[in-house]
Image (cartoon, rainbow, N blue to C red; front, side):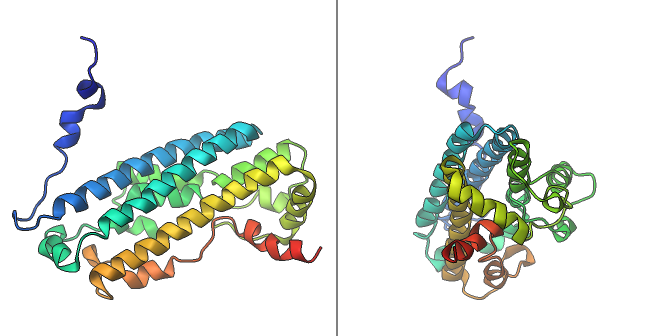
Length: 263
């Protein structure tokens, strides 16, 4: 049988996934579920794009890498815009179903942790909440051991003949990305002589800034909804979320701004 719109997109299955747990008085639980399911779908798409982007960067296909980055940035804008919809929910509307969440928390989103790892923000503490040998843990363990996006970019630059410092190329991939003064010297030379790569770097900064904007908007949305109370699932709520702000994925791209001013 030829596919239809409904069968191809599995519409019946998709629309059966929204199952509120509270009584009918909690009108906004449906919105809460749909927004967060949409987040997970967009996270899946971003991870799909980042995997391709890493291949393009490692093979020095910078033009197509730029297109892939632009798509990720476009998705990121949609993710941020979804908060506008979520903020139409009043605190009392959320309280009407909050107890139904029990131990469920956005802190448990494995795909978001995969995104953080893919962008270089790695830490073992995340695994404390995942059962051993679970599929989710295995996926995250792989991201933890694999090169981050920044590592793939540097590998491609080295392949193109740029003098990427060995200590950066051979770093421990399970550690967060640390700034490197030696690497910045090379990056500054690229900024002076290679416009195509500069545009790519600026798109990476857009990506970094976009995630920081999403984190900030998310913090303010949660603060607007529950104030300083603890989050669901025992998470620290706004206090924890504030601790994640202003931690860039690509520290050298930010730090070299100051050094460029001194040339």
